[in-house]
Image (cartoon, rainbow over all chains, first blue to last red; front, side, top):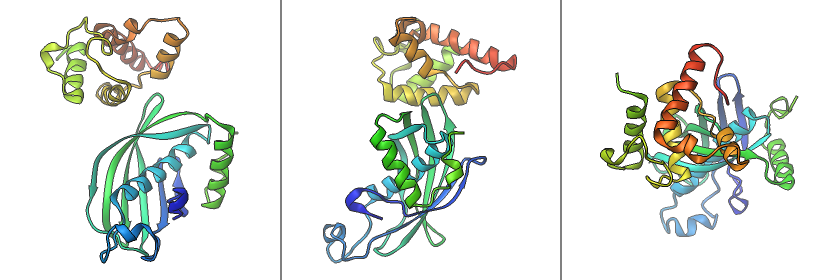
Length: 158
Length: 99
């Protein structure tokens, strides 16, 4: 996790475009990270908004794969976000996301965050997606995809 | 079985917290009911699920932006119900949606 640059996902574990599912991992920073200085002093836990963002980014990678990197998803709606347990510094998150609905210009996903076998949070997320609005953004996403091990065959437009 | 309009009106009432009795066939979703684009995404999701279709929102928006259609053709609720009936008929005929 690179919180300073808002890159919350570290690794793609599994991407199944036929089943329309993804599994990723994310390593929560240690308790020396500045985010825990305020959240909370003496009782460091991962902020729920960052867990929600991690679910959104996981879903986003799945949508990118399904659209062959032709469209960029943007988070539009979060429903039923439930923080079910505290997440401590240094934890490894396993995040599952799946497609609930593919509409015209929007996609709805559901996502779950676990630490070990314990479910920590879940939500339903809606994204608008549009053709990449900037070549620089596409270059950046390609580089990020390579960094987190996004399957190359899933990035091809052919 | 309730009409397509009635199903849409119930979805809008529930999704947008608009009193059901204010939603009429002649209501314009945007101009009369004040539904914004985000709420309309929620409505589209519910309509897609309820009718087993994929409303071609991007195509409709493009047609309006290009001046080839008016918002009334898609967002006056009786017209929207008619478009949905067409999509359902196309799906049942095996020709898929117009997306």
